[in-house]
Amino acid sequence: MCAPTRDLANSSSGRAAWTELSSEIRSCQLCALGKTRTNAVVYRGGTAPWIVFVGEAPGAAEDRSGLPFVGRSGARLDAAIARLGLGSEEYGVLNVLKCRPPNNRFDAAAARTCRPYLDRQLGLLRPRVLVPLGRHALRALDPEAPPILRSAGRSIRDGPPSIFPLLHPAATLRSRRWAERWEQDVDALSRWLPGAKPPYRAEA
Ligand code: SF4
Image (cartoon, rainbow, N blue to C red; front, top):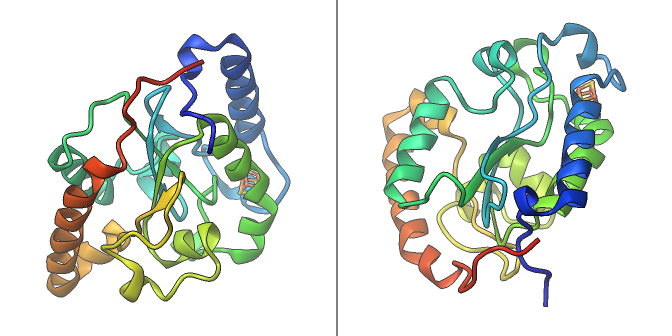
């Protein structure tokens, strides 16, 4: 059985490791994106999230603010989170790639260099549910998963952590068809989620 979700606020070692990791990411220059970013984008959410939404890479608004999913895509994600009834301490949001790629084009080579940060974040947070948003995040979390259009809207791996993919919110802003699909998939997540919710409060 997987270790329970860790509450970073109540674990001095966990909190110290998280703070150190976050500052390492913010000052990272391991790949070329470190030269062009305004801010590395680390995380937003609670200290003991049992569900973590994993995006692909920061966009312009995220690069400016240093926070993931704060633009129009973020508004769409936040509306879904509200619909799922998640409290502010229950969820977290982060990206596979921590720095904005030029022209918002996902940079697979940079993502490989950046990957240890994602693994270390998830290792500290230990969520029960991962929600990859879009195909690059899905590939990062489960390289064997069916394509995003076949994976989205259902649990593709029993956990913890379970994996329940959704389309990327940005794609749903560009197409009515994907917007409708997004609503259906969020409804499916809403029906599935109660069975995955932890029966306990987080431990240190
Ligand atoms: S994208 Fe990742 S590896 Fe590249 S500079 Fe940013 S934090 Fe470092």
